[in-house]
Image 1 (cartoon, rainbow, N blue to C red):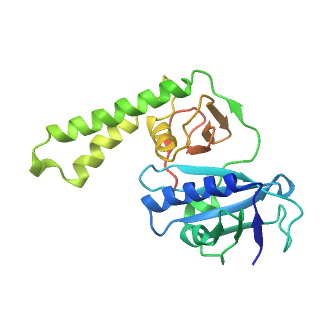
Image 2: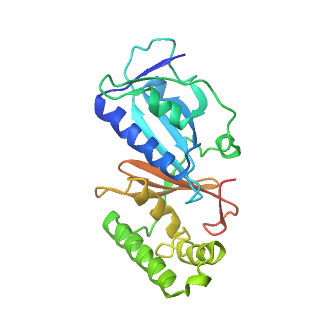
Amino acid sequence: MPVLYFADAGEAADLAAFLGRLLHYDKAAAVRLQAQAGGQALAVFGRPPSFEVLAIRTARLLKPYESGIDDTLDVTVSAGELLDALDEAGASAVVPAAVTGPPWAGMLPPRGGWERVPGCPDAEALRALVKAAVAEFRSRVEELAPEARTRSELDRVGREIWSREIAGTGVPVRIAHAAASLGFLRGDAVDLLASGAWVRLRAPYGSVALRRTSTGLGGLSVLL
């Protein structure tokens, strides 16, 4: 199998942290790997089920490569097997054997054509928005009688909160919640971008994307 060589140990460690978070939400998680930029970067796509979004983490790669790593690398693998194969100290990883990809792995956002969506709050405001939404969810759950705290009722409360729009952009709070929970929403830089049927929140340590079902920013769908 091909071997990935990361630009430094930090890139490998950040990818390991991302994979660990995905596995926290889904122990059987799969990720799709795509080499990009002529083999200088690796894009890793995953879907944490709790958030119903597509999470994207990139890592810088070294050249030259062994075993022909270039833009032709495109494979879906087990997130757990990839994490086990990561040598953080050596900044490398053997690509695991391919697995049958889940439906979402065949429907990725485009590589180009992204344009900034106006009106997105800054990173600090998004973190505050997520913090307030989490606090509201917990408060509303605590107000429920014990016998009323069913999975369906918790899901209903969660959908109501996480489906609210971010500052009138038409993008749900869920996308910022996912970015924060996955460790992406750190630092100060953040952009809300759109390309065709997709919208994406790009933060310093990764991106979170949703596919749109209409020509406007409304009607955002979950990834099947």
